[in-house]
Image (cartoon, rainbow, N blue to C red; front, side, top):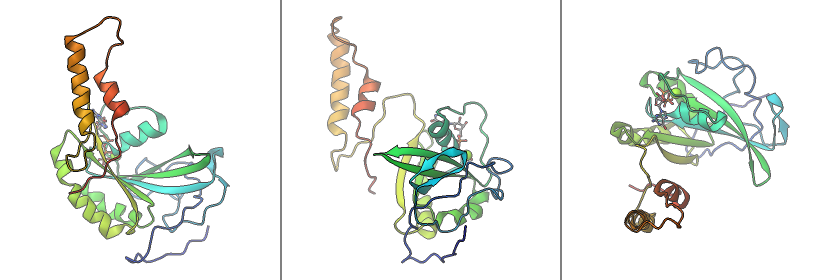
Length: 237
Ligand SMILES: Nc1nc2c(ncn2[C@@H]2O[C@H](COP(=O)(O)OP(=O)(O)OP(=O)(O)O)[C@@H](O)[C@H]2O)c(=O)[nH]1
Ligand SMILES: [Mg+2]
């Protein structure tokens, strides 16, 4: 697959969607090798989209490159494994070395969208490796650990890296991972996001506790918040 190298300039915009050569082929020697092996998909600009058959027989119409970034330990790899395989990597924490990738094809309103997801190492020592991958990412998921204040404080630094190395129009999302096992939502007094929900939910919980009527279905605060919570929010300083 021919690739032209484009130097990143502020005027450059995110490369067109593409059909990526399958990254489903044999994975790099060790997941997250500092430099993915020869089977890793090219890190150059991506070709224009066309229906294509990736490795592993997954048909897709369009493909995008998504990168996960954030401090070491915030849960980038675990989030990816959960999304890809539906499993949680409990047990010992094995830090990603360099960069790794996983693919998943989603059906988005009848369009087969292949996400090639790059799992970066959060450790400082791999930063130079991961910088090279920002350039042709279509989207960046920036993770912090809601139980680790420093990982949230570092968001500013990650945003500066993104501004420095990614295309100016890259799609960005901020994800707070892990939880204390408590119902969790983000609110904004400024925009009103989830403000009514927060107080309505707690009112429902307290009413149920004090006026329990056996015939009424049990109110589950966690489920209610999850169901009603408007996750879509944008974090303005
Ligand atoms: N309780 C809880 N633990 C989590 C969650 N996600 C990840 N972990 C744990 O956090 C630790 C780090 O998770 P990883 O996914 O390996 O972290 P990472 O961001 O990939 O770290 P690096 O590869 O070093 O950048 C592991 O021990 C996970 O089990 C979560 O949602 N909840
Ligand atoms: Mg990792």
